[in-house]
Length: 276
Image (cartoon, rainbow, N blue to C red):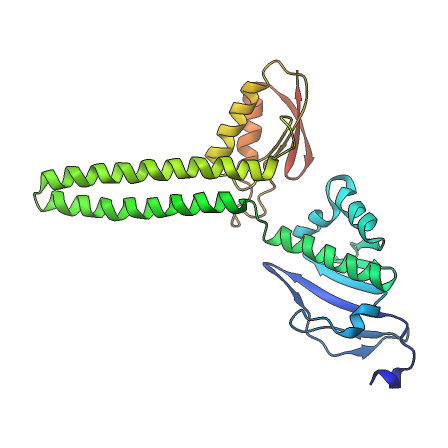
């Protein structure tokens, strides 16, 4: 079929970014007015033709486009620099947004893969890291054990076995202590995973539970008491909060107001705090 089209000047491939996965849009190849070939791949597999593409389009849900752009355009500028391709955001259609990539075939391939990776990470971010996941799993196992032991305790007391019930109660308490200890280790590991090497004036709370994040914030503010400078906080915009909207951001804002600290919004998910 390709030989009948003659010289193909460029290939454009359209991808649709859906929630939780990046999937090719199903369609049949058809000729463009410009003499090129419009085609879509199935199952995420690229054909040999993809290696010669000089133009590419990716459709991305509006909620993830900020990850591609980055604060003040930092991420998209990085992607352009690293791949050498031109990457433009077309907002003529609000949702999904079109990301248009142009360049030589090598540049387009590199940019296509880099942009797709950024979107995939935004949809399914690894906030916890390996150590954080391990400790969370341990905490969950202790919590389940505590539930089982609690039922055993109740059954023993109901049966009149007070001695057995008290012994089971101590087991419940021990399992709960182990759960709290594992969650504390998880919180520490997750915070380090997000903030390692970024210094005392930066805090990314992604992956932490609300209570853990607020404890970390209170501790850091106490450490910085009397310090001068700018503290950047990243509570997040609530895009992964299960549809209930941001949970941590309002709590962080309330804590800063209570402390009488001046702050301003940097992005939808981050704040800049001015320390006296």
